Image (cartoon, rainbow over the protein chains, first blue to last red):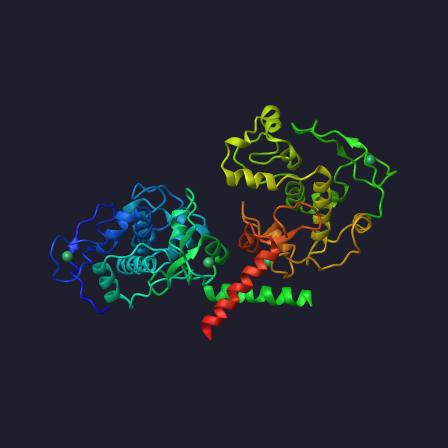
Length: 231
Length: 231
Ligand SMILES: [Zn+2]
Ligand SMILES: [Zn+2]
Ligand SMILES: [Zn+2]
Ligand SMILES: [Zn+2]
């Protein structure tokens, strides 16, 4: 990161606020009020569902085995899942031991620090602006994201699974409850910017719980068996 | 088929009985009472869940958008879905027009004649007995299935998607509500014995709504892009 961030603490509204300090991610010495997601201001105007998706996927777990009154049902801040089981139970009434082993594993692999989640959110915003047919980013947001990551490369965002280009329009075509573009992980057990990106819904489903490396090995073995069978 | 079947009508108990005549699938001239699934008698003893799965997958639609009181929730005889929309509505209270387009399409593609469903059931039974570690079939069932299909080839059943061998033990390891082996279709819109087989759950999910041909084309294109990217 070649930019210094303000990083002053700011107040949040979730029930888990005493676990972490939310921070200001504006450049150090900025004018105006501190903000956690300054680089999402433009998307919030032109594509509010995409902006909400970035925040949600970066910071929340997905479908879980309990109802949470934090940010809608079945979603919980990822850093909460870093707590030991007994603290989850005594502080937040989340009884991991009572859940099925697969559910436990799924929840545990969603765990991530606040800092990693915030890195992921910024990376996803950059990925959105680099999609085909993305709305053009305002210069100050472009500069900010370039300072935090690499030079801006228009039309460069690809599905991390099938490596084909992603088109921003796929967000707009999303059916209710069924996104055509999903946030995906090269290794499903690591939530950090190097490991996160967007994928077609079908690609994300096909990858399942495999790492991308294992997924590619698997489909190569299928192609090999199909070819052997056909010859 | 090199065997003549009895084919006498037998009584069924579903609410859709006046749509089709259920038939006896014992050999013509058999002794004892007529039966619809004579070749499942042994599996019913040694692997009742597998026997129930064959009957269910061969003859019923899967998850649907209404509750049916026929054979459990969300399952309906596949041949019912051959009826025109107005008959579905007036006779069985199934209002296709009120469903979302994707649900309509899913239901319509499950439609199949009674005869095709019965062929599929027998073919699935043969596939089960040809799995690795399958219980040995009684000679009379083996003879019957060989007469209806091809010569018995032990250990020959493969996942129709990844073409790797399937092990009967995967049925036993199935978690509640999550089969490790699923019934799959080479072309999801055709329910007949040439087009149906078993697949790993992960493989069936990865195939999604694609035909196998399109699935293989798709994963070949992924491998090609991955290779291009790596070189
Ligand atoms: Zn600040
Ligand atoms: Zn893709
Ligand atoms: Zn008979
Ligand atoms: Zn398979």
